[in-house]
Length: 287
Image (cartoon, rainbow, N blue to C red; front, side):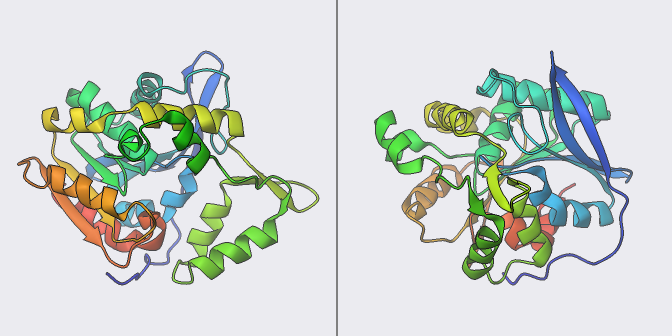
């Protein structure tokens, strides 16, 4: 698939803080209006809601109200000490849906966010019209790392705090030359830029590792067969050390009547940044 981006036109996006728990509010970007079913979009681990901007813009153009959420601990959302488990993360999203008046939205999550949305669809199928995992949803790290210590050592976040923001942006552009400029800018939103020009991740290392542990403990393979909503899994055809795991995940669900599998090639893990227009069109199908 070729990256055509999204059409360039101004859309009024609203910024909201939605209270989901005592002293916890989540930052939400809302593209209001539209006659089609609403969409709720959730980012991956250590990411932020702005990475969905291109997809959300196109979905809005196709007639949908859209909300993209900074999960707790991320971006401009509050960063409490507790609540970094799947039941709480799902409850957070249900309360966002309630606050926005979203009746049975299509829920989509990238990477770790896909696993959150799959868990949500399993826990509250009556609240969800459809579910999509964007290079995520079926991540089961325990298969690749049977021991948590091995997973923690291999997947701990790099020590980026104190790195010049300009250096990180240059690296992103070098590694992803096909990404649109607004996708690069949105990905830089994973970090707080300090007055001296250096950055630090919005998600602190301690919370990152707690969420990684929750993901390592998650068992989506035990849930997907029992889902009662249509499901889309969009996989990246990417040789990044997890290619075999992706193929295994896809093979495990391709025979299920309620599951559709699509591949993006060449594809990056951040498909929603790389192919915003095409991904939005795919998510729109069937709505």
